[in-house]
Length: 361
Ligand SMILES: *Cc1c(COP(=O)(O)O)cnc(C)c1O
Image (tube, rainbow, N blue to C red; front, side, top):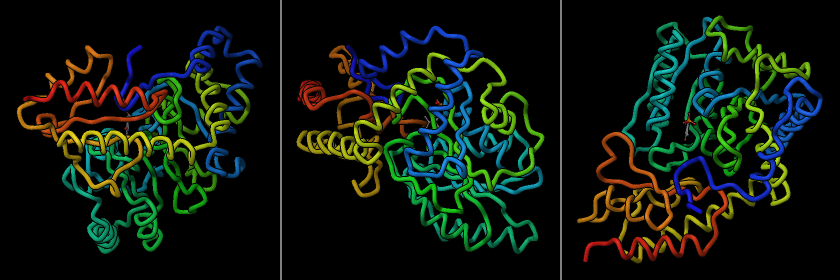
């Protein structure tokens, strides 16, 4: 079976595949609603958060739906947002804010650059000096564009200093990287069923601090976070949920718990990433970023001279591997390898051997 080294969907475990086959149930029956409640409790519990303070909201959709629901529902009607963008997903949040009509500023960096903390703080002070203080800062935890892990704690500290709250796109990190839900600056984070949690795509997840839920803003209808939250708090669901994806997620969360939680998953991802980095290094293929700047989830590499992405991709696909291209103007120079899902040592060994055969002589 194909080894998926793209950042989601991931190769499923046997037991998650089996859970999908059990998913023919009605979503208005207690069997489903109890499963929904288990998932809603397991998500904050994964990060040792008190489930009375942190609520999980499950909405059918991909990760972008979670990000949109979070921005639409957590920024107050007359709030002001600062978006920190150093890649595709930061830019996407700026685009969503624009479409939602949220008053916002964007602090932009190049897509291979780090978040500029002082520039972010200057933007906060600027806005305050103009009499338009920022209520919320939105940032990406793991910027999948480059594989960079952005400094959430450092940004949270600057937010705290200036009375802003943090909204986090944790779509490609939730379940495998550290996340301080006990930091009172963090108001919400967005996640997905189909990446580090090892379910199938289809459930958009928003985890929110109940204390920081504003009065319902009037933005959109289907992704209305308040509506989903209140229905799910009553043990109900407003519309048809992604039933099979919820079953898979439920099983995947049990499996994650039994395997040792996010810490164990980070450790195994780290070992896989290290194996790929070292192996590619032996072939003379250089990583985009130093290891210390990277997530455990995905690393980006420079395409070696004389090998274009299509040749690499197609050769690997023939051997049963799917890798990922660079985005935007990084498409011609980079390729990316994610290590989520059911992958073992031998898979990665075979990946490296195949890449060796594809290198120009
Ligand atoms: C994958 C991803 C998303 C959401 O993408 P979808 O295709 O909508 O699932 C959002 N943010 C980040 C950082 C991601 O990696």
